[in-house]
Structures are given as C-alpha cells and as structure tokens.
Image (cartoon, rainbow, N blue to C red):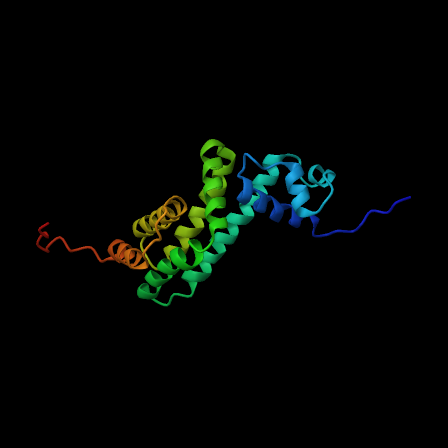
Length: 191
C-alpha cells in the first residue's frame, strides 16, 4: 500500500503558483493544469485543496492584496510626521509599486475580475480600506481618498504607459493634494 507524502506547504505553493500563472497568462489563461504544473503538484491536489477555480483565485488575490496592504501599512507606519508621510507615499509609488511589472499585471487582473465579478470586489474594497486607514494616520479622510486615487492612478498609468514616470511629478502631485487649503479669508488666486 502506497503511503501519502506529507506536504504541509502544498496549499500555499498552489496559491503562490496561481499568482505566477495569472501574472504570466492572465486570469483567462489560468487553468488548474497550469497551476499544478507550476506548483509541482499532482493535478488532483487542485480539487483536494480548492472546491473551485473561483475559490483558488479568491485566495490568491486575497494573499496578493494583503501583501500589498501590509507594505502600505509598514511604509506609512514608520513616517513620523506629515512630511515623512508625503515622502512615504512617493516611495510607495516609485520604490514599492512601480518596480514590479508582475505586481502591475496582478493588480490590473484583480481590478478587471473585481469589475466583472462582485464576489472579488470585496478583496479590492478591503485593500482600499486598509490603504486609506494607513494614510489616515497622517491625513484627513478626504485627502487620504485623494492620495489613494493618485496611487492607484499612477499604478494604472505605469502599467499602460510606455514612458517612465518622473518622481518629481509625483512629488508635486502629492504636495498639491496634501497642501493646507487656503482659509476663507485668503484672497482667491488668479489663474
């Protein structure tokens, strides 16, 4: 009688392999067979560990989103003041997010899936909520929402643009969004 091999990390390897396959082939090109091959597991492991492809995709994208949100929280959690928080936002965009083509593709794949399938939208909502909460350590909720939109916009543009993104433009955008608004008694600026 053959004994079953003990492989406690198999499920995690399958989830990681799913992200690799999605990054290489997109959600549409992802299959149980491709993921099993990438993870180095028997095809039967797929249905043993996951009841459906949607469950596997959900867990893979949840892991990806949580990793991204964790990085956000670490980066902003170390900022001692608003100036350091501004710098942290710029670093998030240029050092953490734009350096990984894989993460760009995975983010866009998640957004597309979430736009079509409401069950995946909760993953993006949770990710945005955590990001905004991290930003709200340093900025008011409205400013935090604007900064989050700036970060997401940079991400999408970087994925689709052929030109590199200039860090100085990002610094200017973050400074403009986080600038203290003029008081009602200030004279209006002329354009």
